[in-house]
Length: 403
Image (cartoon, rainbow, N blue to C red; front, side, top):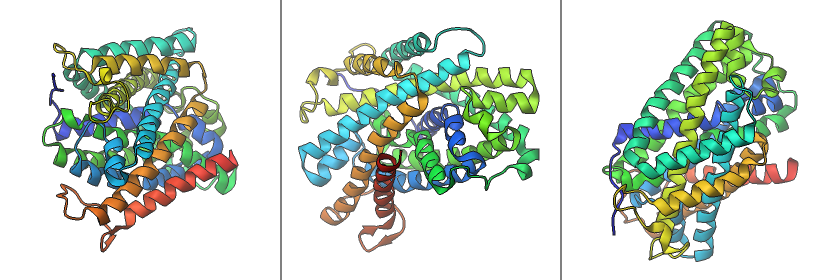
């Protein structure tokens, strides 16, 4: 049987993660989150980053032990040896992948509406189908597009930071119209912005020296994106009233309009199109690789058909097709906040299981060679994994009971 082609080094893996995280968050969910928490959006980003970092360290260690495309699934399977838990993990990640693709595709349509008067749903569906075709064509083309598009979106964020830097002192960072509840809920929404770090592990079988490269890529991607997020959030609330941002389908374009005029708004909207396209593409890649992984003969979670690799393109073509087509129905929700909330809920369940898996493996298999070890330990107990588990469960309870 044909295998996936290993094309990614550390640089490509970091750019892959940064591109996925940035596009999914700052361009898609900033407005929705700011509408809930006002100027304190900066603290919401920091809280979400802390929660992401705790779980990210668990992913990094587990990926160094099991550098497989099936990622989360294999971690939970090896730790608990319970098919119901590992199958739940796979289903949660697949569910998150398709609905988050839909959310970012809707964000793409929102930015495109600045240039063309076109209906959002057909545009979002068209983007999903185009990225599905690129995903099928091959990882090399996908990586090249990712490198270019990620560079463009980082330039866009640096422009926003530059525009707002002189006004940071005026940012109402302690303004929280919904109080602590609003701040926590905004952090829950913004957590959607960090979903990329969990997907980096799914390209392990297309990465050189994956046991060492993937953990480093996870840590670096979270650090780089957190710095950019906080500075962009600070610039946004310094330049634009939070109520305006909260009701905007293209929040960063509004920030650029205030700071630079119509030309700035046009430029940022154009950059956002590249960013959201990039994010949909790499979510489709990571989700199809997960489906490919858990459909292998030894697992039987899904029909083995989806683990087949195209002999010419060297991509899991049946998995690519299913993931793309499964994304389309979620576009019809036509509500970025609702779709992001569903994605987060499924992802947090997976994160809780992944953190629990690391805690158990630390005691059950301490002798297993690790290319990376999460810091802050008491004996075999990982304090960061405990923090990741508690925070993930806490956000699930908060969302279900409060909103």
